[in-house]
Amino acid sequence: MWDAFVEKLRIVVEDPTIRNRILFVLGALIVFRLLAAIPMPGINQAELQAFLSNNQFFGLLSVFSGSGFSTLSIVMLGVGPYITASIVMQLMTVLIPPLKEMYQEEGEAGRVRFMQYSRYLTVPLALIQAFGFILLYQQNGVLGGLTPLQLLTSILVISAGSILLMWIGELISEFGVGNGVSLIIFAGIVARIPSGLSQLAFSFQSQQLPGILLLVAAAIAITAGVVFITEAERPIPVTYARRVRGMKVMGGVSTYLPLRVNQAGVIPIVFALSILLFPQMIATFLTHSGISWLAAGAQHVVNGLTNQWVYGSLYFLLVVIFTYFYTAITFEPHQIAKNLQKNGAFVPGVRPGATTTEYLGNIITRITLVGALFLGFLAVLPIIVQGLTGITAITVGGTALLIAVSVVLDVVKKVDAQTSIREY
Image (tube, rainbow, N blue to C red):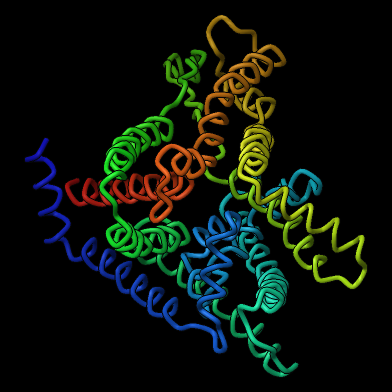
């Protein structure tokens, strides 16, 4: 195994195509980190750190922004607007049949147009999010007062930073290795590790040693679990009927249809985060209202959502619900059964048509339960770790861990595919 790894590494270093792709990815990520180090003017760093440390939502949102929220950089929104736009477009395929046909039935040309619409939608979403976050930070004392011209300039700069990252991510996908947006998020996650380790080292106390050892053991176990769930699939045996065309005999072969345990990936966590984020943002705005009863009610909402038990329970429940919801959107048993029947294939022991649809639906419902519970556990993992160990200096959340492991597995597969092509 070690010899095979060394041989693959030698091929990567010697092959100019693979080497240039990897160097392009590294160069693009360096540009991203340089942009993330440029802060917006007029930031009160003490108020910013206090605001982020007391807010689980913005700590998680910082993961998807590539840690831009921790410094309020010019790319503070990260690829969040683009991810949101992609999710909204996928949800709209349920409501708008022409979009569904474009995405699923028009092939590569349809998907290219679909992604172009996602880019168009990213622009207004970036402008709205930039305006909302600037007002929120102003109300909490993180940003000073801005003139209308300064406010407009800040909104345009932050929105342009997000669109620039979207462009860099697509360049990585085209000229590099792996998915560009995922790699940008991965780079933001990795960039947070040194600061977290340094905070842990400075605040270390001897009585924390058992908790740290427990944290390391849990991180190893969770990483193994993420790899297992990410790669796990339920194979459905499929047999193609034997057909005779002239002198040729076609079909008669057996294969399988892989159903992944985690069909939705990290999307349900993004859904749940968005649902929990907007009520808190609105309530935070209303706490400064001049109407006493409205401000008091908004404060109760903020206090309830910042309670770890309430937050953890709602977050877990929403992740489970959205896992089933997103799986139902992306996986259609009826369409798969129809395609199998159209191509002369069937599941042994199951009648084609409606019976196959029901059979596939029952299986995907059962295996999705495992994936949904696992995603819910990963979502509330930081709360569990903090409760068991009392360590808050470094908490690599389950969401960040899921993204990091998924990106590494994807990049390894893409590099392996490139080396295999070279060998052939």
